[in-house]
Each structure stands twice: as C-alpha cells, then as structure tokens.
Image (cartoon, rainbow, N blue to C red; front, top):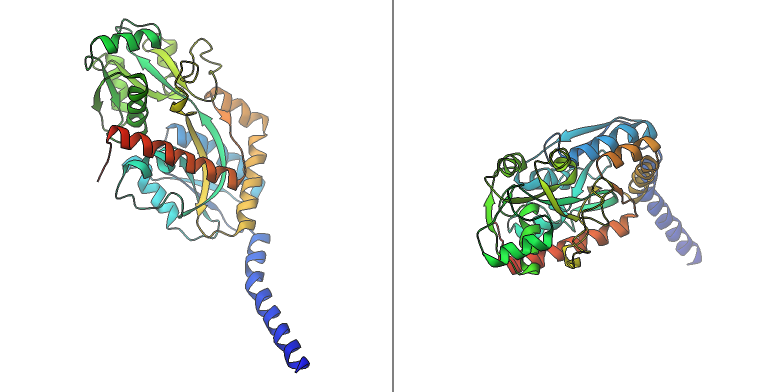
Amino acid sequence: MNLRRTLLKTVAAAATMAAIAPTVWAADNYPSRPIKLIVPFGAGGSTDIVARLLADKMGPILGQAVVIENKGGAGGSIGAAEIAKSAPDGYTIGMATVSTHGSNPAIMSKLPYDARKDFAPITNVMAVPSVFVVHPSVPANTMQEFIALAKKEPGKYSFASPGTGSLGHANIENFMNLAGIELLHVPYKGAGQALNDALGGQVNAMTDNLSSSLTNIKAGKLRPLAVLGLKRAEVLPDVPTYTELGFPEMGDGGWFGLVAPAGTPKPIIDKLNAAAHQVMQDPDFQKKQKEIAGEGMGNSPEEFAKQIDAAIERYTAVAKRANIRID
C-alpha cells in the first residue's frame, strides 16, 4: 500500500512538473522572436508617441525587436479588442489608455472586450496631462471667469470633442456637472477636426492632450485655463490643475500603460515589466518624456490593475450622470 501511494505521488508530482515546465522554459527563452506592440490609435498621437519611445528602447533590453502596429478606430476599441483576442504568449502586447480601459467600458454598451477580464496588466508607463483651452475671443483669462460667463448665459458657449462618448467629451461633461454650468457639445470625427475648429473660433473651447495643444498655446492661438494632471505642467507653470480649482473629482488625467492578453504567464509579464521599468530609468527616455509634458507612472501589474478599476468606476459615474451611452 505504501509503495502504491508513493508511486502515485511520484506520478502526480511528475505530471505537475510536466505542466509547469513548458511555461518556465518559455519564460526563460522569451523572447525568441519579435514582439508586436499594438497601438489602438493612429500614428502621431500621444499613445503612439509613448509606444514608440518604449519600443525603441525595450527591443535592445529584451534582445528582440518590438514592432509597432497601429490599429485605430472606434475610440481605441478595435485595437484593444485585437490585443484581447491575441495568443497569451507574450508576442502580442498593447497600449492601454484611460479611453480603452476607462471611458470606453463605461460608455460603450457593445464593447468587444472586457477591460478587466480580457487583459493582463503589465505596468503603467506615463501620464500626459490634458488641458482645457478656449479661443482667444472668449472673454475669460481664468477658469473662474469662464465659469462665471457660462453660468450667466447657459448653453451659449460651445466645446468641441473628438466624438460623442470620447474621453474629451466625458471629461467636459464631468466638469460641467461639477461646476454647475451648461456648454453646447459639438462632436467631431476625430481630434484633428475638433482642434481645427477650436483654432478657427467656430467652437469656443475644448480639452486636448497638452502635448498636442502646446504649440498653439505658445503661439497665442489657444488660451489654457486648467490642466488635468497630477500636478501643474512644467511647460505651463501658471495654469492651475482642476484639483487646485476645487474639482478633485476630475481625476488625475490620462495615462498610457502596457497590457497583454489575459492568461499570459506571469514570468513573461514580470520580464516585460522589468524591461519597461528599465526603459523608464533611461535618461534619454526621461528627456523625451519631459518634452511631451509626461510624468513617469511605472508600477506593478497589481497596482496598474487597481488604476484601471478606478478609471472604469470614475467614468461609469460620469456616464450615468450625463446620460452618455453608445449602443
């Protein structure tokens, strides 16, 4: 009986080791071929910029190229779905943003992925603040003055967004609710068109990534009134954050992180996390991060998962208050 029991334990242990061994071997030999990094937005935007900064430096650390693939459309949901349905082997990873893993799950009823269940968070990487700007023709030099104008004439002043349900739309809806004002929403098909009409004065205001708006702000073509970020932007030291203005519920701005498909082995997630964190310590990366007004956000997979949860909860509340829903 003892011999039989011993044999059974030996067989069970061998089976367990056999199951674990491929994963350990795969992690030890990972990566053995190039890694695809899906960016769920078009080339040239903030998400793409951060992804390329990462990819250029992660490749040499990992010993394999990290190749960018842009898959934009539907507010980032097409590319995010592509990441989610990829093989969980570490050879397809992707960028996650407050749009793909915050506002989209809150607003889109037919989202083709589950932001919590379909991904394995790797690390957050960078926060890039957004900025609320008005056309110079608007008679307000501060956010307090703009709020006073909007309260005096509800619905007179308009704001542009990249589209109904976009992050830019959700953020201003949140602000209107908190400030007790009413602005006219003018949705566009993309941030480029929205910015063009804001510059032309066809709309009075918009919120945009600071990196995209900074040149026009410096040229006096747009006037910044508030920054949505962890702290004041070094490039705009005189512009207060929403928290300073008394609206901490606006959150801490947009972030850009790395995720893999759910089920990706933890040793591979850990190796990618370590490589990304090594990049974030690189002086050249930090210099370029500063140029786009970015702030380092590196953390653990568990901490990043909590940030994703917090973003979904915040924008779910915003969508409910403002009755924003896309079927």
